[in-house]
Image 1 (spheres, rainbow, N blue to C red):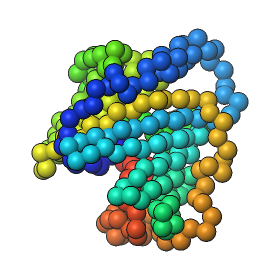
Image 2 (cartoon, helix red, strand yellow):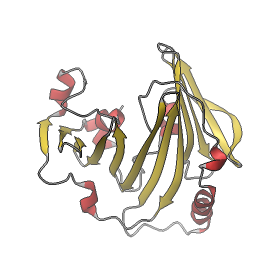
Image 3 (cartoon, helix red, strand yellow):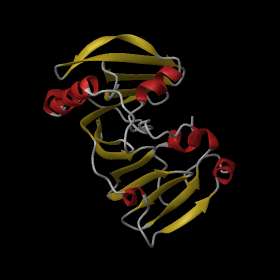
Length: 237
């Protein structure tokens, strides 16, 4: 789910990093469990490894219903991104400064208790005109492969073939730079016990607050000391 990296690199051997047993267990449970209404909002966790010739970036994702929290380290600074209701928070946990931006109505409209807010790359690529181009084994697990190619470059995603449609690998090639970044999603887990407070910003942060229109008027450019890493969850596009 790392959206906008533009560096080139070589893929890591996925057999050494993919946690295939948890993926298989989730798929089997999904197939065997009767379709009854959930008693609480579903929770998810995944780790994403984005790698290129300039190094490796690790991002952690958690969600509970439509709420999401992501953490990664950029240039030695721990960046926390939180999506909760009508607000997108992004702050540097090292300096304790960041922004709180109102989300677009289009983004809020997509929120739903049973919809996983991250790990939906296949929907994005298909929505951009992408199509299934085949099936391929990744780390010994057969996945469906989707691709879209346009003036900006090429995006490809490999997802599990079950109803969960969990992304396993993402590749983004950008024509303007000629670079490719590879992202592997590992250690998927579900049904975690996560307190709602985990999806609230830490107390005593210095947050600059903007409405969505104020952010749009600035041309969606970076605001304050932190990057907006998951723009689709802010804009709905």
